[in-house]
Image (cartoon, rainbow, N blue to C red):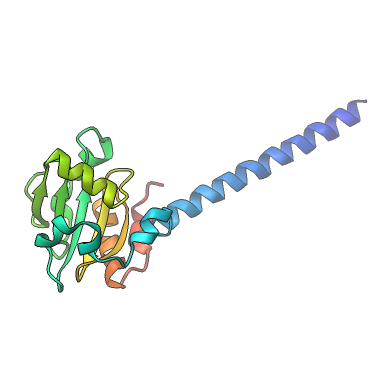
Length: 175
């Protein structure tokens, strides 16, 4: 009888180890490819013209420009931390802050805080969580995703330009 209990407990232990390892690798994979985890709504917006999706923003970009729409919320802890670090973002990344005020930084080119406009833009651009960044290039939505660090913003901008290798963002994740 003790042998049967020992075999059963050993079997249950191995099942638990395999389940935990599977969960660990699933989370690891998710954090290593953050830009591939697009929602269905975000995926269907990629490639659409800004004129179709959010014509009110057309004045912020020209057909040649690349600009990031950075959605922030005042009640969002990651947003507050990101706002403190906006000055670390490369000047080649141009950001329009939407939703909450932000300190002056070389990369920030504009601010939209009107609550009605912000709510409309969040709905039209499928922004479900903040901080969220949409990159627009040539008047077209190129890529969007949740960003928590300045390097993640630069990585998403690189991805929009086709120069992203993924190494920078993975290196910036906590150990």
